[in-house]
Length: 120
Image (cartoon, rainbow, N blue to C red; front, side, top):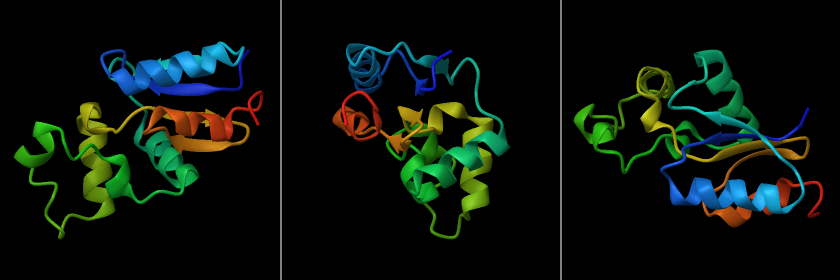
């Protein structure tokens, strides 16, 4: 069983490139197509915490739904944004990669190299 997981959207070029970089490193990761199998609220909170990023960097602000739901409003709390991502997984920024060396939002895709054990 692999110890690398990618939260992946196959329609996203950055996500596809990141997945290929992982495979090119000699590892077949566990691929979670988060639009088909979204993380639970608890899993999402843990991913965000492990990434060290603010919630606003994990939510996809370029998604039309972000604007439709008024999520750019500074009065929206982290809990509000997390609830929106749980209800609408398309709002999750991607790809998020988890390895024994850390958790990263890999935008750009090259950031995955920082957490791939084989590449370090």
